Length: 542
Image (cartoon, rainbow, N blue to C red; front, side, top):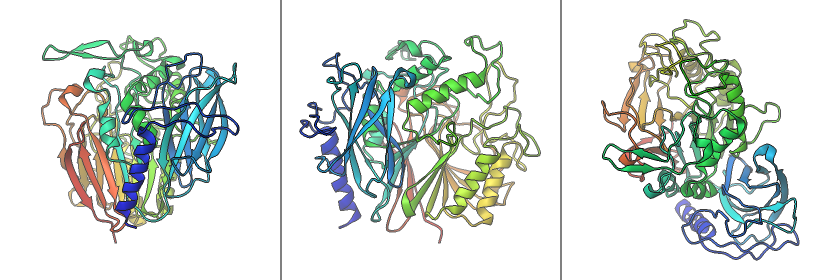
């Protein structure tokens, strides 16, 4: 049977399962009848409102951190309840397995997750979630359903999406505009998973009910109390993450496509770094210690995402995911271990020049060295050569926020880490490394070649930038030439007025597809409605 036929069959099963109305005729937990589940075709995973005496599931369901035969299933309810999960490798749930999961309690903002294991490689796993009220065990929520496709099995094409930057600059959920409609555009590509490259929330960006556009019309946001001010408390950070699940497109996408998530700055505060104290020029904050804010933000982020928590290092965000012989994904954390923002011109890799930090840098090099997959995708929350200055009102002018420092000669400052990674890749002849990222609020495709570089000790490679998902559009930024970037495509015009609203349709994502037969990777960049803006085929190294 051809790969195309198998893929189409899998997609048809997924659409029937997620979109057609069904009636509960099985048992979620042995001996317990399923509540009736009804969903109109093409509607989002249901937000249950019919019976408030029963637990509700306001955020739908979500899967993530897929790795070989494992997957995290996540959801949230509105009261103390036990998470119950049923899963099977068929949409009729024949011979299904059931798990009585963890308690959803106020201590986790009523979020809960189950780590499924021993799942069938290369097959679609169907799952459904309900919550059982702890005060009244006879009262259970209705069922919300999802599915995910496991890596492995017989060789098949792999498709994934990537983007970032969600609900920024005051552009929130505008239902008249279609909400976060870019999620629906990504869903139509049927990706196996989605890399969210950070800025999942804008904790430092309050959302107002209305924003007046330049043509005099109004952008109308859904508003919540948590989005009325900058986030400082744990509950305020939680409310920022919960806000995005009010969007029907995101809930539908999350029920079908597993998430691999990292963070950047706006999960905490613009351009933050460990140990920073917010200066007096920034008037909006009462809590000025960034370590305190970051601890609240990290906890909320873990609670509201399908992370697999590392029991040996429960704060760890960087991690690796294997998708079999064709692909491994390396998710970086460029916030937790960085030095303070400076002009970024250090001549040696000291504490202030650190970006990944020594342990993470060593982990990445060894993980790349051990990889036997054809393609190695490095998910970086910031681009390599795009210059991003730190323009916060409480910091000195001239400080750098990203890898690049604007000097075009030998690597300096944080660029020393990039140079070390690239040199290591070349010396060990690690093949087919591609970088994906977001952060700068426009899309770009860049080819790096030592022929055009000041630093030449590296193999040529590609970097692709996605975003924003639903935020102001900026750019294009200036480019640092240290590593020989050849910018092949930029999605916004030079001299564009900044912070363009979503109504101008300048919201972007990337799609990568690896052909199982040829092992070539095709990467394309798309606008908010899925229009193809740029595409390149990358042949694997022999």
